[in-house]
Length: 289
Image (tube, rainbow, N blue to C red):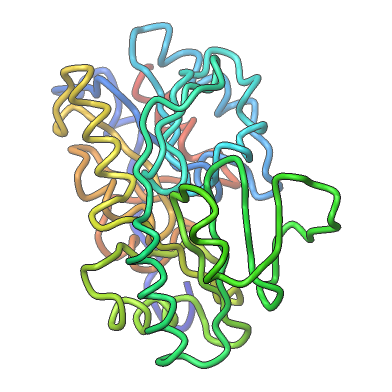
């Protein structure tokens, strides 16, 4: 948060989530980076204990992340963690324990390549990458992260026009070296319209936008998963910090933004302590008493 904006009003978790609360969630969904994970990418003891405590009383905790399934090692050994993860911004539903995809929604390669052509024409110096969940292909101009040293067989390089047709991809990524993510997202959305779903979870200095099939986001997959369990939106609590969490928080009956979140979320959703303070774990623990 910058400038003269007022600090967000934090929820008094002891009151809001206390035993006197008129209702409690049947499922908790939380983003990972910037939300559940600490700034160094680790899981705090408080957050880990809260997951165990929630599941002990029969409340599953589902992780909903923009990460692909190949980047889930950080929660693989989390004690008591629910084995189901919504990955790639809702394009994949993954059984972490079994190492199997339960559900996946892929891009139509022809629609994706049409968007590539239109974006190249509208925004100079954009570059593209494609994520399947287990493999990642990117253009030479695309600044890969982590840095690709050519040692991972799951990562390969080529033109977008060739990559898009090599296999089924769940997400297309668009990079620009000098356009900030909020502006880049707005420009991309203007070009692709409702042909695809564009969002971002990038920091202010990273020009990166993530694109999924139309209508695919964390909320759409969470809704599909909750329908399997017979859980309605009003019984779901959700936590997030970035624009790619807005749909999920808007769908969930009990949404929460951590106080380090993007201003877009802080202006709309109830705010809990930051990921530095293990806000997700503190909130769950206070609710459980």
